[in-house]
Amino acid sequence: DSLKLLLVAFDDPAHKYAFFCLNKVRAAGINADLYPSHAKMKKQMKYANDRKVPFVAVIGSNEMEAGKVQLKNMETGEQRLLKVEEVIEQLF
Image (cartoon, rainbow, N blue to C red; front, side):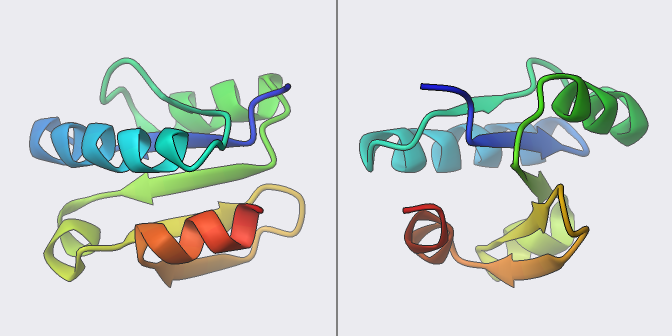
């Protein structure tokens, strides 16, 4: 099954939070991955495009404080702030 969701993080704390989110998403049976480092956002988005990943979850300090992720539809460009549980519902 091809990758459905790539999680990308702005910094170290966000990367840790992203890892927590990744485990939840994978436990729900969704093929997801976390970009291995908090590189520049442009680089992470290019990686997602190159791999043709349909959704990207962007995580920064605002998202962490809200306990949510910014889910971006890579085809339409639409972004929504969602809880991890809502992301799982969206992707099923």
